[in-house]
Length: 223
Image 1 (cartoon, helix red, strand yellow):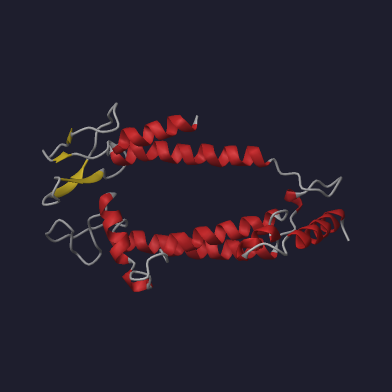
Image 2: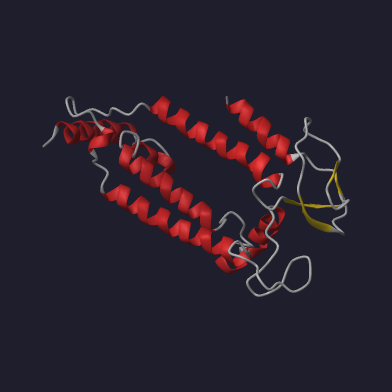
């Protein structure tokens, strides 16, 4: 038996003694000193989040999730369908890949890949990369790993503002009047304040938060 397995077994025995009086979420103690399976449960959580939202008892069935997803996709610039219709009315001949069905299908495929990755990491939890070969103890620099993930999430947050919302590399964002009577996809300009009345290129006011400037400021807070 390797030092790594012996160390993890001793840690599991210690945690087993501490977890007797804990409630149902004591399962977290099982993966506390197990980096492989800790990674597996987080990947599985990402897979579940990417497919559907189980928190609503009315919209919980899979076939009703479109009532959640379609408004959010429209807000982010998806207006066309592979069926030839558009949310703004009219007929579409070439909706492209990123239609309502395309975005939904991409999330389903991504969820399936995360599901398989979670199973792989749960089965092959004892990887050499997680432990020091000389001592057999875990050698992960957790603060460094957390910093890398925080930096990458900040880059994604920053990119969403000046690229997707402004239309530099993306469709823009759905804007409408305060009563929701009219609406269209517009390219939102970068502002210096959080709340402002912006005039888009098609003449529709939106009394909403300047999302492009908000995403950029959120990125600045990360640093």
